[in-house]
Length: 93
Length: 166
Image 1 (cartoon, rainbow over the protein chains, first blue to last red):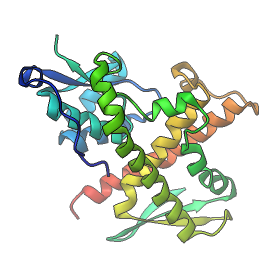
Image 2: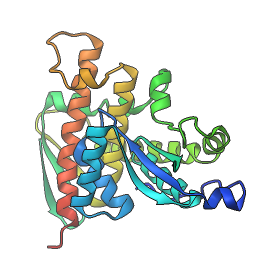
Image 3: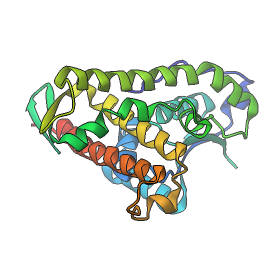
């Protein structure tokens, strides 16, 4: 299973503390049931919450799964990439 | 094809006919992105998709090798399960999958589907359309993507069954 590995952390403390968000983007190939199950595994979501995010990805093209510090966000993206979901880390607007 | 729980440690995928077997044996090759820039790119996503070049560069050097190792390991686990259960494609073959291998199977199947779709440019409208009945390579790629997706769905259901308390 994908495991959280030691991700690189660089930059100033301010940059690390600034809120970032983990965004999952739509991919027409990934099964909807697969995406929902990955959300449950990575974020510990209930099935209902995971399906809500999955449908948001499917209908709107993206969903914000998590907001917080950069270091933890990188670890979530790494896990999501391990499951081959299209995920990015973005600065919050 | 169908799945069933043999015991606490093992699932079985059975009813694998000649055609399904032939397709399944191609999983490792299908999951290999080499030779296609699009497939290689899809299996090596960046952290910020270019918004933060310095972070993406660090990601490329520190994280992507680990992810590549994870993907290669998943495909190898599937290949070994296939080889152990079943020497060659035949009629009504069955494959035994340890419960601990369900996640590597899901990842390997996804890797194959994504690499095939990227290699053959299967965009959303193509995926939503019924494949035409011809022998164009893209049609055959779509067939494989759907086949691996069907197997993935069976394993997802098996995975949910395994997670529920008995």
